[in-house]
Length: 99
Image (cartoon, rainbow, N blue to C red; front, side, top):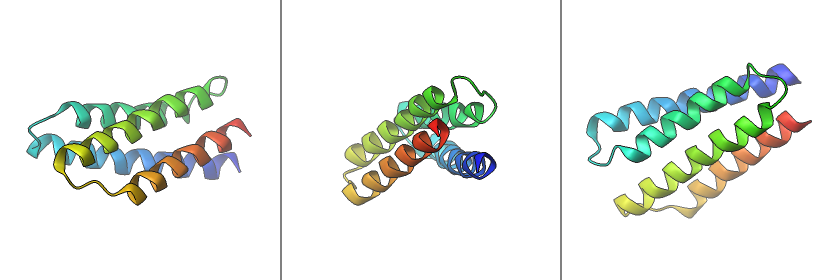
């Protein structure tokens, strides 16, 4: 079960980092892209550490959620369902790491 949670976490992190890198090239505000990139890196790091991994997942997941929320607000393209799904995925990852 641990390997499945880590695999999903790495997939979520890599997709988030890919989105951040893509956005860095085109966005005028690069702060949210950097937040999302840092969040993705923290999620990947969490798969390595065993003691405090769930704390790292909380921080990394929240950075990704905050960056996505700010991107949506700034662009005027805010979709609440997208952010709810992203938050639920982060919450499930945290629960998976705690268990």
